[in-house]
Length: 171
Image (cartoon, rainbow, N blue to C red; front, side, top):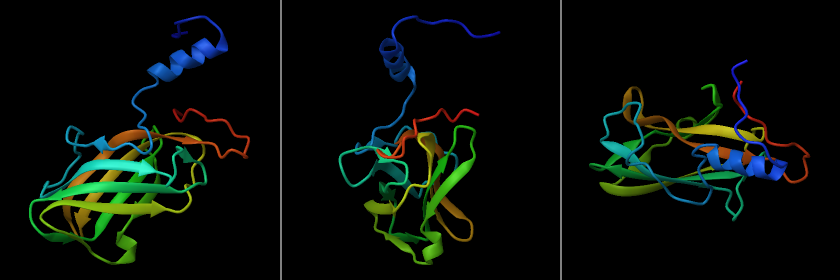
């Protein structure tokens, strides 16, 4: 066995310790600065600078509930893109959701400088747990401006009436 006891105490004490050390799960309704986030690829002629996800209300993300993703994008010059995508992965890297503008077959115009794009997911089809959020900004067929496979972790809570408790997604 490779495990070890780190702390003993009441359930409340142990849960508090666990939550304090669980990692960098991002909070809903807060802007996340992406300037230091590792890029997986892209030319950076246009790049994501900030991200905020929310439900449209004060609470966090809920299984089966809405998810709004506001993206701030800096473009070096005026251009249009046809793919602005938000992906959610489990902790093993399996893509579970891809909200992408490409199926709409409409371009997204970007002016030189700062731009803001809002993606709305009507119903989040995920079980309660922790997921990794990724972003893609590109123009078909092959121009990738910005691609970040692992921007942040998000927590999806159970719907208040479903009786499901959050589960770890680590395999």
